[in-house]
Length: 161
View 1 (cartoon, one colour):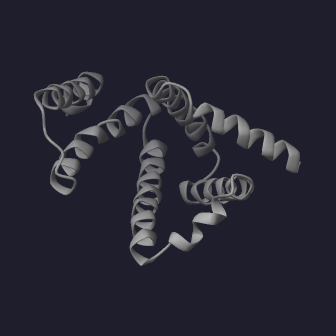
View 2 (cartoon, rainbow, N blue to C red):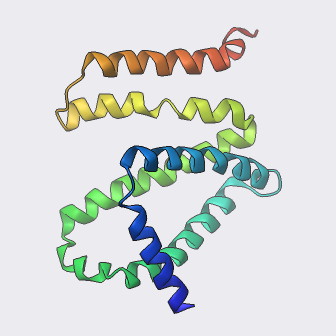
């Protein structure tokens, strides 16, 4: 088992040498498949239970990876600020996934997933405010296209009585 974890860790490290755009497309494909299984699990289990088991299993899978990739050497760098910077997005992710599971339980995956896919709108806005990133014409056009795409996918829901 330990050898398998080391082999997997090496394989995952080699993935980091792939073109970042290709990696992003792989991520999109994986994230596009995940809601199918999430919706199936919500048919027989409640969102809180699924969320709890999911994070427990992810933690159990990450611990060997953490150890075999020698991430332990970075533990001294954990000060209060770094812990906070790591903890806040973790808490936001847990809250977001909890709300997402509840939304998914009450509707279809093909409606909920596109609605949650508007998060780049918020990212651009937050990056402008907190990180002082520019808000270019490309970002504005992309944002408009995101909103238009979600509207097109769900326009019947907006106009039903």
